Image (tube, rainbow, N blue to C red; front, side, top):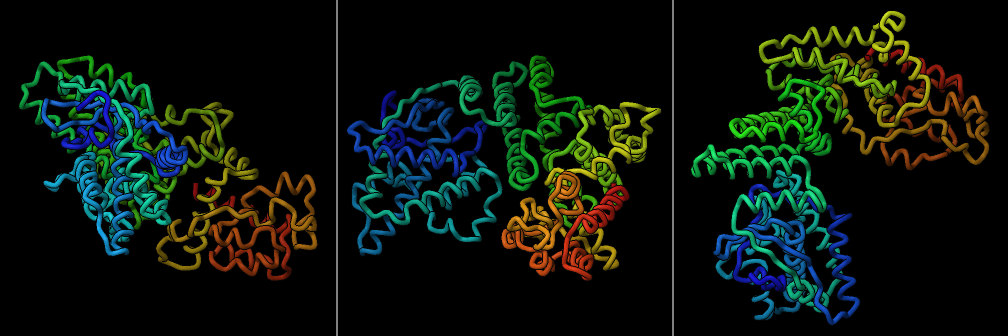
Length: 573
């Protein structure tokens, strides 16, 4: 491979793979992928005589035509996705005219995408590669089928598919000439390369390069560092190094599959942080590299630590996958709905230790109550410090949850006069904060719980309603934030004086849970029209019932409803 070359020459005759320690594909369509395409479009539009420059690539190589990409993987993956999309569009256009690709076009495709021996020129990370081969290189026409979704076992495979669909959408109005220009621009673009011949040096280079450019996640950096430490270990034989790296890779494969499931609830670096807290049995451990650095510096125990901690990390992801996939238990689902919270290390332990579902429900309900109080009261107190003692005593040998629940109950009932700064989460403080403006995310969660409370009252034995039942849930101000047509009273609302704006407009009594489409449809219409649309949820019908006598929504009604919701929350939390 030449130091200065073109994309086509770099790929032609060679086979490039993403090594096991590398990050997966992570570009977003609305950021890097869009910029990638804009840059190519701008270059073609400029009619420049100078070839486009695709930057520098670093590879690991043992002297054969097999290369591992160390730096530039995101760019090269995107190039391959883009070329596949362009060739797909070009072949479709030519097929409509009853013709096929030219000999030159076939040769370019073989040089850059798939050789005549039926082998892909580029292979992505191992756990995504079958998807990449099947749906991007071999059968790209099927990428829009709904059945493909089941193949999104990782976040990265989903991003690959999204990038491909983004390119297809951009190309749908392009003709053969446009496609040919794209192919010519990309395959003849200039790039530079650097080759490294030692694996340990290659892994170290990966960490070095990505510590200075667009950073990968901390999880990816640790993964690479762990593999590097195994590779340079003086305590392991070569065959043992291979075995340990395979073991490590399998753990991370499971981790990345779990990430695809929980990514909407919590990110991988958050899980890393929580796994560290479980591993060291302390809520005071953060995600800094200090603890990892110390462990890796002790060469005699570095490898056992790597294996033990990676195992704990995989367990943590597996536990959280079960937690966030819960659909049957209201109390477990309710805590999971909050996503990233201080309770997560307790959750991991609860699943790891195999406590019963009944105990999980009791523990998670207590944890949710203190987490929500902490969010509502907005104290600067460090709640982890107040929970660390009961967390550290909750072990596989001591699985009793009662000390945790009793401690949380004490935190909620602590008397301010007696306990001072320990009394941040008391009933009085909670009740006071519930009278004012509530963060909308928290208010949505509280009103979702209130909805289920109303349902449970009406229907004995009723299975709870998941938040997902509401399409794009939003918070609606019953009395709108902006007075309707400047005439609030005529529209069925109160006078927007200083007291109403400060005390009633932004309180739970004036908030309602609705779908996004519902929210958009009602806007600032008169209350009578809003009231007629309030039919989907129990809390909406409650507002109807409260105004049966007269279709107006004023401070008296808001106060009554607010009192009921606050009483429910105080009882629930």
